Image 1 (cartoon, rainbow, N blue to C red):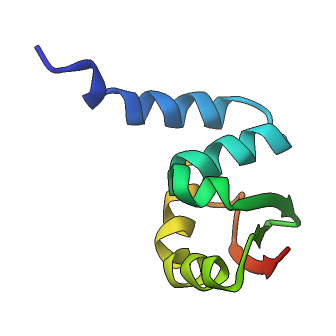
Image 2: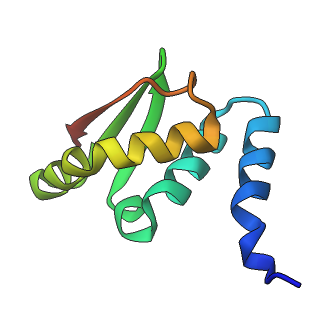
Length: 92
């Protein structure tokens, strides 16, 4: 018997991909992709397949930009490859 945690990532992907695209879904996927530290200091919005990320400071902008290739792959895994094509970072 495998622990429940081994099936959760797959269940999360199925749950997200099966629900309609909304701001809440994108925000939830962002939080799952980046974790609580990034989530606390950012705000995201999806516009025309571009994820706009507003950050609380220049330092956080730098960290998000540095991590954006990994974050993009995670978001594409959660939401589908055609939902987010790129990430743009802006300071709030």
